[in-house]
Image (cartoon, rainbow, N blue to C red; front, side, top):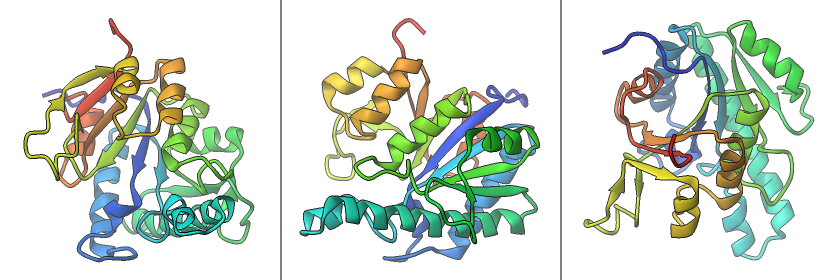
Length: 242
C-alpha cells in the first residue's frame, strides 16, 4: 500500500446527516470528533484540504419549501445551518490540533471570514484546512453544487463525497437489497441514468472541468485516508477513457 497521497489538494463534501450519529437532530460531538481525527490523518500527509458541509441535520431548504415556505427563504435558512455545522467542525478540528479557517459565502464577519478565492488559496498553501460555509451564497443551489464550485475555484484535483453508503447504486440500497453498485461511471452515464447521488448542476460543473468525483462511505474508519492514497474506495465518476 502506498503511503504517498494520490492528490495534493482535495475538496471533501460531508453531508449534514453524517454529523447526526444516533441523534435525530443536531450534531453528535463524538461523531464530529471522529471525523476531525480522520481529516487530521489526511492533513498529516501534506494534503491541502477544502471542506463543504451540508446542513440537512438542522434544516434542509428544499424540504422546507415543499412544506409551503418560500424557496429562497428556505434555502437561506439552510445556508445558515451549514454555518452552524462549519463552526462545530472547526471546533472539533482545533481540538485535534489542525489549523482551520471557516470562509462563508454570506457576510457573517463576527464568526467567519468572508469567502474570497485568493484568501482561500492562501490558507490552503499555508497548510490550513478551509471549511466553506453557506453554500454558494445563493438560493436554489445545493451544497453539492457549492462543493463542485469550490473544488474548481481552489483547483482541487478531486471532489470526494463522503456519505452513509459505500458508493453509487442504480437505486437506493437501503430500500432495494438488489441494488447494483457501480465501481466507475462517466459523467454522461450519471446524467443519462438520472442517478441522484448529486444534483445535475454539480455533475455538470465537474463534467465540464473533467473533475473526478469519488463517492464513499465515511462511516468506515480510515476511508477518507484510503481514498486520498488512491485506493479503490467507493465509486468514481470521471470522463470516458480516463
